[in-house]
Image (cartoon, rainbow, N blue to C red; front, side):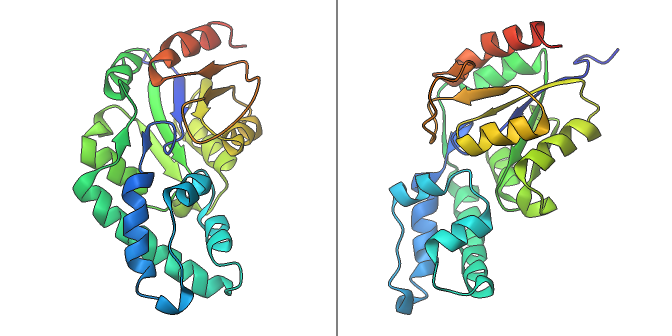
Amino acid sequence: MEKYGNTGIVFDLDGTLWDSSKQVVPAWNRVLDLYPQLHKHITETDMCGFMGKTLDNIAGLMFPDMNENERMEILRECCREEQVYLREHGGTLYPDLEKTLMLLQDKYKLFIVSNCQDGYVQTFLDYYGFGRYFTDFEMSGRTGQIKGENIKLVIARNHLTKAVYVGDTLGDKEAANYAGVPFIYAKYGFGNLEREENAIDNIGQIIDCVNDLFAAYN
């Protein structure tokens, strides 16, 4: 029998494991400065509202009057610039994240599924050396699939018989429901959900939460 069995915790990234909004905003604005005719800058509030959304949705929100090809090209430039910045500076980890990952890793396999562009999850893992904690990851920018499909993909290719998804937005909850797995709501992130049965106020609380969920897992 494998050390971890076939039980896994799948995490969202932004608003669940880290907050990169303060770092990403200036990187995106440097790109937007190259297009002065747009008269466009974004704020941290704007960025928080983008978290959890797919790139095409974000592009539509930023440039509603621009054709799809043009706005996606600008957004891809923003994403390339943000990865350069984050590889040099990192983001802001939520308190006790690494300690929690170390404890969880002793019992469960850990994964990441995000709506980000290809390379973003890798940047997170590489900057902090967290690749040793995670078995696999996936993102919409690599597969072209919605988050729920990517959760199902990670579960299938890692032969998981039990899994939960941890996220901070309504989209994360809907993705977990789509994939047919329990959802744990990270209240400390960017979302604002009410009356969630499995909710945590900080990342450290996930240990007891997942232990209880897996104990009751059918």
